Image 1: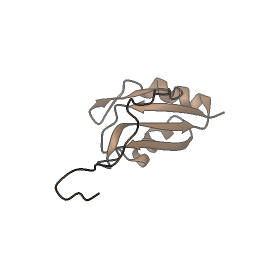
Image 2 (image 1 turned 90 degrees about the horizontal axis):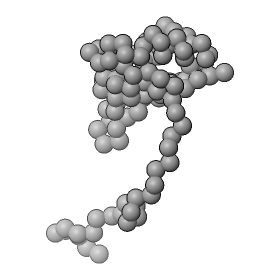
Image 3 (image 1 turned 135 degrees about the vertical axis):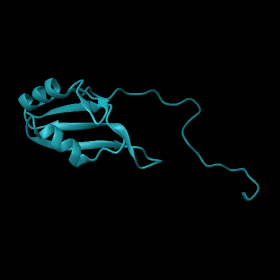
Image 4 (image 1 turned 180 degrees about the vertical axis):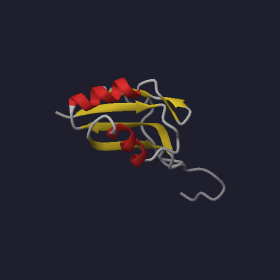
Length: 104
């Protein structure tokens, strides 16, 4: 059975291959998802990885949690389900309808 891991405090120049290589030392890796910032296009400093085996996931947690990697102490643990966030007050986005060049 596969296990999903949260990997945090990553350097902002992290690549999926770097993370896969690091985790693969502890067991087979099925999937890597480095979370990217929508505006800048760079990594946000955390990722999710799916290890093929529970043993590999446990080995990765024990071997990497707190380990210094590229000057940053990694946080590695089993991923928790995403919490539902309440809807924002005032509704969602919308267009900007002002400014000197705006025409309705």
